[in-house]
Every structure is written in structure tokens, then in C-alpha cells.
Image (cartoon, rainbow, N blue to C red; front, side, top):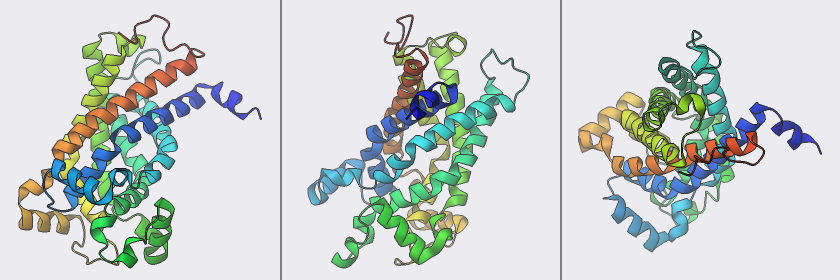
Length: 310
């Protein structure tokens, strides 16, 4: 009965809840664009606009949110874990900085790399399930198989039954290779840009909502641009299943065949959609996280100096 008051009484509990709010805001705001990105990466289906028109016309608008249950269900824990691990590692990698000062940029970058590598353990199975659902209409041709996946739980059970636990972690290596460097760029860009947009805010914590949105959005864009070719390879590997022809036998094979058959441009296919989504999603994530954290630390008062909404 007294769990939540006690849980929110300590900073870890409040950061956990704030991280959950940030993750939920990010998933809901950017999921339709993520579905378009996945479909662009998996096949040469045309521009994002043509895919959007086709999906809405043939499958309905709800298809843009297909598979959202998997990331949404795990997003609270995942984002709480990411922010918690980052907070610890960003200081652990540069212990020369005082506890009262913000982490150095070196600590921020290295802490982000470590965070990205560790969070892949949770993210890899979630993204596998999400990708299988998002590509369901294009990868299943018969009416009998089209109803095979009724939701995230159905996909997970099917994978465990046909491929085992190892199948649930299909694409784990490429996920870790993608997430480690991109999280380094992600957190470094956010911390650097918020300081440039609002000098002194890293120490005072008094940045405006506009600063949160812009810095968060640019952080998302930087992280995607630096790792996008790896994400294309990851999508193609995780889209494979025992019921479909095995086109690729690993990361190098997938990279080689994709470039040979479709040219180097395939490694950047869908980048525009991904960048647009990244700006919206990560601006929402950091804004929701920072605002929720201040609400919780200030007992419901978002900001004591009325600067957050400037």
C-alpha cells in the first residue's frame, strides 16, 4: 500500500518514473515514422510518402502503430535503465570531476557508449518482435500465415517455439555494435547543445523547454546519422525467420549482398524518415524526462524560476 510513496521518496525512484514518461512520449510521438523507416529499409518500396499512402489505403491508419505494444510495454524499464546507467558511467569514466559539477564531455561520451552496449541486452529482443510485426503484411503472403502474429506476445511465443532463446536474440551483435557508438554521440550531443543554447544550464538545470526540445532533437539526429548503415543491416537480419528464405548469413554477408544488389545507397535508404522521427522522438523524450523529473523533485512544481516555458 505504501510502495509508491516510498519509491518516489528517493531520487532513484523519481528518475525511474521520469525515464518512463520520457520513453512513452518518444514511442507514441514517433512510432508511425518508425514503421515507415522499417518498411523502407527492408525493401525497395519507394519513398516514405508513397509507402504511407499504400499502408493507409490497403491496411488502414492503425497499421502504422502495429507492433507498438512491444516497445511500449518495455519502455519504462528500458529508459529508466538507460538514464540510470548513463548517470553512473558518465562519472565513473572521469572521476576527476567533482560530484557537484556536471560530468565532463569525455565522461558523457564514454558513459553513453557503455550505456548503449548494456541496454542492447533488453532492446534486441524487443526490436526483433517489433520488426516482425511491422513487416508482417509484406513477409506473409498467405491468408493463413497473415494471422500468425496477433501481437507482441504471439510473436515472442512463435520465435521461442520455432527458433528457441537464441532466435529471440537474432541480431544482438549488430544491435550492440549500433547502440554503443550511437549512444555516445547521443548523450554528448545533448549535453553539448543544451549548454550552447542555454549557457550554464548543465550546472544550474534551468534550461527552457525550447532548449530541451532542440537539444534532444539534435541528439537524436546525430545518433542516427552516425550508425544508420548498421541499422539497415540490423533490420534486414532481424526480418529473417525460419519460415522465409534465408537471404543473409551474418553481418558481413548482409552488408556485402545488400551493396552488391542495390548499391551503396541502400545503406542510407530511409534516412530522411529516420532523421525526422529522431528529432521529434528525442525532443519529446528529453523534454518529458526533464519536466517529469522536476515535477517529482519539486513536489509538483515544474520549475521554481519560471524559465522552463520560455
